Length: 433
Image 1 (cartoon, rainbow, N blue to C red):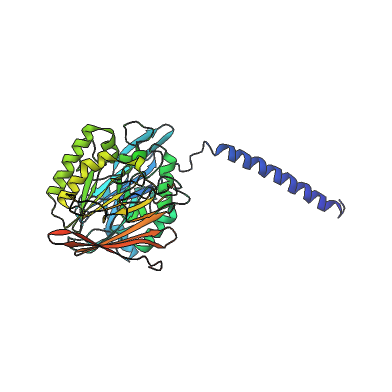
Image 2 (image 1 turned 90 degrees about the vertical axis):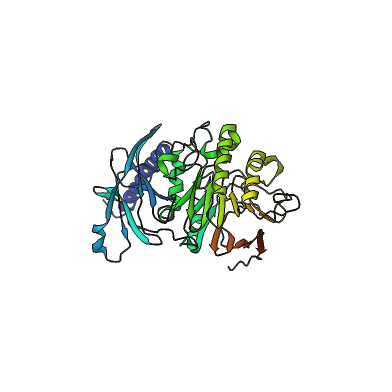
């Protein structure tokens, strides 16, 4: 072979290699519609920390493996910097549930750990045999009166692997010591779509495993499944079972450091007279017998909407009289894919009394709607991904809503006044805050 022939040979080899790679890539592209992008394996994934009825003394953890794994464990101990001591962690056996939906087969594992010390930083991991997660750190809640911080997110729903992750990560970056994260429904777009749940856990990553989640269902956790809750909900979350019969783990409450948090299943309120009455009686009892100084309620369908065509009359007529009577402080909602916050223009128990309850709806995902400037909103926004950071200390609740770009969009203080409705003090947003 002459020297002149060698470049030609290399050219032919490169051409053949390009053709081969094109064929391989085309084959892989053709398979992408059938390949599960988040397959379960022996390694624990979708590890999620949940709120419990008393987060000062207990934690609840769920995770997933492939269906050939039939057992799982959680190991936990107070945080130590000495890696040699990790081998002395307490081991708890998990409940294991075989799960099958279509071509999805997995084992879901869950553990509730009681008897923990309050306000204590723990480390835990989950797994079995040779397959274990990393060690996570989480802090148990403190006592009533301790300063409390938490995150509130409106609908995630779409863009769970693309545009939504920046929101939950920005919220965590600004408030890594949050005691819990509230999700106001429509967490995914299709409740029985495994890929979307996989994207959610991909997007939130370790945040799901270190800050307890308070998940409230929306209509999309029921969409395309009739009246049946998403098949993934109960295997995937272990939430307090202190709600009405037939609605447990969607209606529930937890008390954290002097604040009562209540999740209402607004989808079932809209769909069922029986479930409406169950929840009305349950909420009445929780508010009437409430030892906490502060009360927050989270649900999906807002009392006051961004446009008249989305007015949720059943929710408002059922629960607003209770919220007025028992002086609920803040109501956190979703559904409308925009931002609205109101109190100053909302009536209280009578026409002559202003509401002491702040009503907010927000959106964290990229699915957006425009705002109709109704007469209930003090602040609004369209086409803006947002996250909310709330801190409660003494007689003051401090609220800040940030855009996905990190700019402060809305801020106020809510101050308790003895014998009077709450006082709201507006703060002009400073984008540097």
